[in-house]
Length: 346
Image 1 (cartoon, helix red, strand yellow):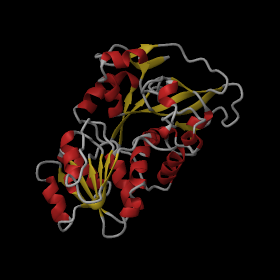
Image 2 (cartoon, helix red, strand yellow):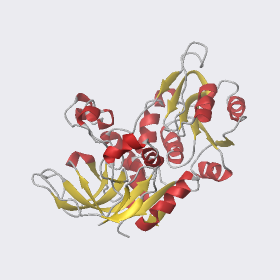
Image 3 (cartoon, one colour):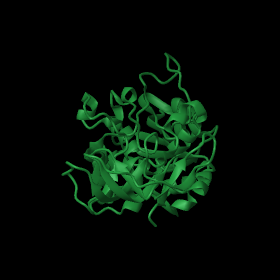
């Protein structure tokens, strides 16, 4: 089968021919219909050689959807032909967090060497993908896999981040979304659907800000040296009750810290490497700072239900698997509107 693999540290990913995975007991083989492209893939490909070498060659793709193609011995939860989405943050399945469906916070993953597909284990950017356990699949139940595959991360991650701040986002409040790309443009829709907050979106290009307005942002402003002053003006000097930074570089983290109101939330979702020192006088009084990761299986089910109800959609550009290396170039240049999706089987 054809697969997109990161094979050599520091080199571009390549489309290669590899064997179709063999299905073992309890496992499921899916024929991949769609695989999302994400900045997290770039994060892996930018890791130091000594860190990434043990994972290579790595089939990329942690956002996956497909059709159940083959069932391993003992699998009764699905049938051949079922359309499914892959729940990406795999865990041990036996710790307290996993028992609650929060495999994104598995207590044993690091010690057991468990890695998410596409971020350490073979991922979805291939014609077929082996899923280790039925609990890592969620039925699509009528949803278009191409239009919705990115909800497994670009929907689930902002949903998990926003959900914990909802008690602070009633009528008359303000939420700031920094970065309106793959995750941010979905985050805006989630805020509009679930909260009473006025949504202020920040990004560095007018094209991204236009997308933010299209999906429901009340205000869209440039993420520059004047952003904090603009947020303060729009909030009557109070600042934002919650700031969600989907970029996470130092300049955006600085904006988030300066823009948050007293008792507000700063949630750093992006993995750009920015750091936020926290101490008395360094941030608004009683502000909380969080760094969430992905989301739970039950939250993915909730996100997919929001999509069925038409509350959220993903802006996607589709590409053939052979176009993937160019897609990553465009992603790095900020030239993808919403989310890029690969179609490994055409």
